[in-house]
Image 1 (tube, rainbow, N blue to C red):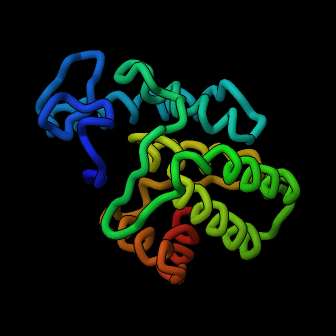
Image 2 (image 1 turned 180 degrees about the vertical axis):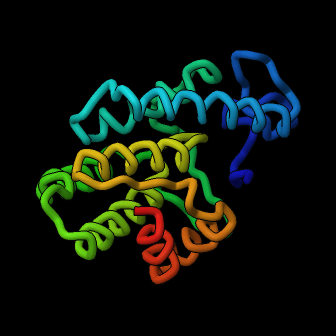
Image 3 (image 1 turned 135 degrees about the horizontal axis):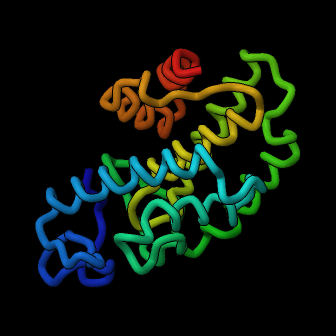
Length: 194
């Protein structure tokens, strides 16, 4: 799903909203297919043998780099443009690092959600999901990075979080609702995936 931004300033091929990529793919739908295939495989690799377990912003960026480095030179780097999607404006680019520091410091203060019963774990995971969704620190690939990170975080806390159990369209609706402060559907979807 495309972001709203100015293609001239956003690492896109001239006159398009297709991101400049290492394969020089200029057809947006072909690039999306390549992203899906590559990142699904990379996510599985990461979750079977995580490269980091610090659960801080450096860890989050390392996941993005791992998932997208075959496609983009800027993989793992914080975006420098402001973006929005489906009427939701995400964290301004210049505030991402400060906001990320607060979000991940709070996660650490919560002991990375370890030793929580399922109900409180779901609540804390939904809160973290909402916070990182609004952060949206990367130019592309935020959802895939978020799902990989959350799956590893859940695993570390003694749970299995399987996003394959969640309908992608419903998750998109739930994410949009959550951005407006309504988290009921997101909570139910997360609960069924654990």
